[in-house]
Image (tube, rainbow, N blue to C red; front, side, top):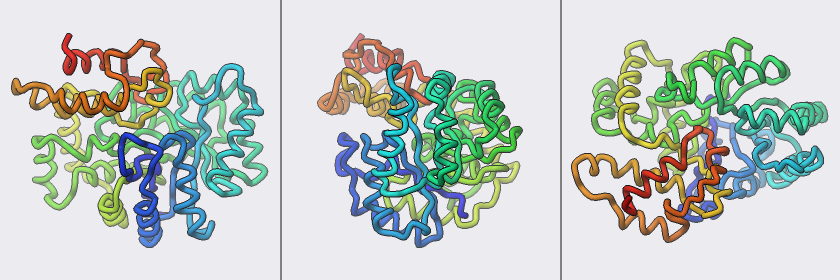
Length: 375
């Protein structure tokens, strides 16, 4: 199968402030084009687009194309369960996902965003055992998990659960040697256990698609016709054992570009990888929030703070601030109109518990507050 997967988490929207409203006419066109070009893998999750992604998958894909034409991946949201929840709630949620997607089985099914804490939830709910039962009944074809923690935690899980067939990892050239994310170490751990790899965040939430000019120039000199995003996706796709690279495509132009160069992606040469290492070093030196805008932090925020939007504005303002220009407080005020301000944070840290990047979100919100609201 082709290595590019369609991540249904950054779909086109009429209004980005309303995540649950998706431009389904455009998604239908994108789904059709994706299939026409020979790609088959679609990835959704219970929480994407305010809980609507699975419904969108049913309406734009499942109800419009024969089941044998595509592969569908979904995920068990361990962070959804409360301490009082039982295995019965888990079984009900799995059935709800099948119903929302309009299918009788998932081709790929994952425990979602596993961390050390999430693994303990899975142990309490016997999630691995439950999903193994679903697989035996034919409701899951291949079983895996997505992972956001350190390599030693990953090694423990794979050692205790050799039945797992694949692991979904955050792999990109910026996080490759990052000790907080440990992309390379986690990748090597998965391969040491002989498991296949599915890649998420190859473009790090779009950060590697829109590079600062100094970084973009380095890559443009080597390949004027390659976009920054294509560099990032080629890096991930060329790794041994990688069977799928997910891309959260937001419009037809992104889909057209990605499906074109991924039709026959050649592994990067040593010289090309060295250029990416140079770009990664340059990007790591910038004072930016390493947020991928996955939005896991938003739904449970008691103050309804639009955290990813604030971080994106803060990052975009950094070049101007370094040149002594004022912060874009007008844009900040516009964002604050749809939710709480950064200063409304009550430091409950629920966002930090859910953040796959393990960011000190409350500390970054203090910087946002200082920048746009004054100290």
